[in-house]
Amino acid sequence: MSIHIMNGPKSKYQTIYDDIKSRISSGEYLPGAQLPTEVELVKHYEVSRPTVNKALSMLQHHGLIRRRSGAGSFVSAPQDRPYTAEKLSDNGQPGTAIDHTYFGLLIPMLGVTEIFEPICARIAQQSHAHNFHVLWGDSAAHSGSNIAADFERTCMRYIDRGLDGIFFVPLELTPESEVTNARIVARLRDAHIPVVMLDADYLRFPERSEFDLVGIDNVRAGYLAAQHYLEQGAKRVDYLQKPYSACTVTLRERGFRMALEDAGIASQPEYFHTGDPSDREFVADLLQKGATEIVCANDVTAAEFMLTADSLATKVPSDIRVLGFDDVKYARFARIPLTTFRQPCAELGDLAVETMLSRIREPDRPPITVSAQADLIVRHSSLMPPHKGALEQ
Image (cartoon, rainbow, N blue to C red):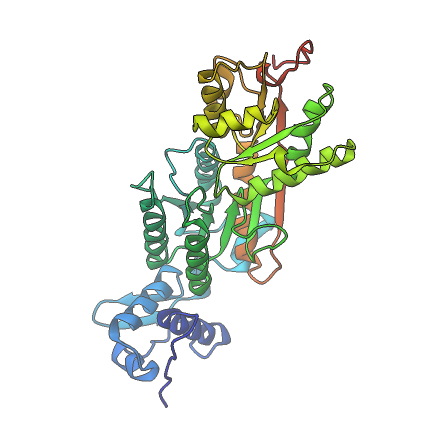
């Protein structure tokens, strides 16, 4: 009897992979047994030979079969398979027995952005302790609409390679972001590749995806950012973000609103601004509307805003105050040192690896959110005169 694979959400090669894997797990195909030939599998599943070959390559990559040139494909013995629940938990040490395992970094503009480099470096360091390999999907396109297309191509290369897990940061700051992220997620879902999202979900609050998420507590950070100004006596605090920002920015804004409400300040629509911080007309309009204490969605936004404000003869911190997020390198060394939240990058890298290994051990458990705490680093940019506060040492 042949099996006809209908077009659907799961790719044809993935369906074949899942079926053969299930037969191996159930004992229908015993260790050492020879699988049907490629010609027989083509007839059985009613697919093309390249599709069968792709499924077999994926089974081989995951250690479930061995392929011998001219002889065929054979089921591997359990002790030869690179990742099983038993091997991952030997002696109570998660991940110590992973072998020939490859994780990919699916992060837009990796190598250009600053905050994700130390997180990824920490993941790479952990590869030695847990015996896995890390692939870096560098993006050749760093601006414009080409980012989205390049990001998708990187994703497809990872899927074709049959990676064992992917650390995924959603695309942002382009009109194509949401559509691109949705397509990538659909492909990762179809490929049944474990995913750990870093920093942000691809869905906006209150929705939540089926993937694990590792990042800082953005709601708390947004709350503390507004509170920093309120404790200095501010009666109004403004929030600034770029168009098409990541979901983390929405969460920071939510915490920001909560702080204003707890202080008895109604969060008026004119307190919230979405635009280009390097646009003189936009910034001039924002300042004209009375913004003086400003929380920016991240350090890049804050730096661009401060530069534009300076070009308009508006000085920080005497005329306006600015606060950001991430504590990128230039935040400390800017002409006016920037108050910001420092992300615990090493801790986030460790948590990301732990979460990925846990997901491989327990593929069917519900998605989890793992949060680390970011620290507010107070510098001159956010201090209201005559307050001096406790500056970073």
